[in-house]
Image (tube, rainbow, N blue to C red; front, side, top):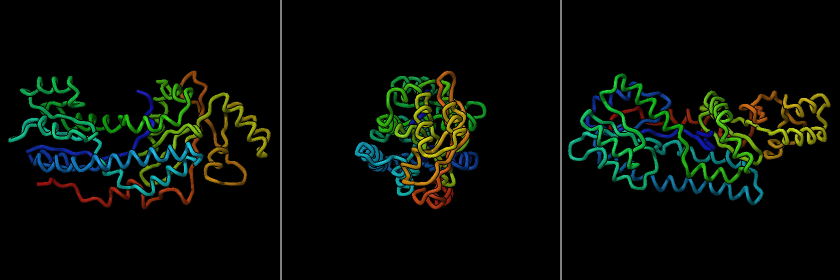
Length: 325
């Protein structure tokens, strides 16, 4: 899988007619997840059916950022403004996990009511329901199924949900791919490049967007700190070194840029409307045999979301986990 062009946290919904099982999940699921727990199918369905208009509005907001970029407005400050303004994006449910065996309405019937809801679907099954789940998976009705009798079911469930939370949303990816040129798109599809970027992002950010102009990844950590991972191809290094020389960067530093040992934040400064001498940062290779190098630059700007609009702050404002009955 190539590195996702767009990623952010989202809510996880669980539906099970056993409240004790849900209470157990409330205790063992990762604390950095926003979790909603339902014991009644109708309430869960109603909750998720409210979301599609908000998904649509969020997708439209992102498309508008790209449209403004086409008209000459830099993307980096736009994205930071989007992060600052729309903190309720974290509330959109990314994954729902539904028990198959429930009285009155089974799990597949409940999922069948969610025609327009765009998230990922996991079915919990008993041993007798496994063939039903296999057929549902083959028909594309669910993304995964897990047998409840699986040893260490909690760990297995967490791994499955984490995988789906990392799976890119196809619509968002299409929106941001429009900012990339063919060479950039090909580089991001390289397995070694994707692996390195995934490792880098997972260690630092909860949310990121890949853009092509300038080429890099804008990321935000859970506390609301924003940084820019600038990426350069061999041709890009030559152009960057020439620009750095024009900006008065020391000849030794210009040579380091030319050789891919350092990068200068010239395009970042231009996007943010900054003046003064560029900042330099040590570069490192990304992937194997691609010639791609990168360097990270922290962004201190009034446009940054800050702690008040961070994921950690938003999560702290939510209700304590409880089973909705």
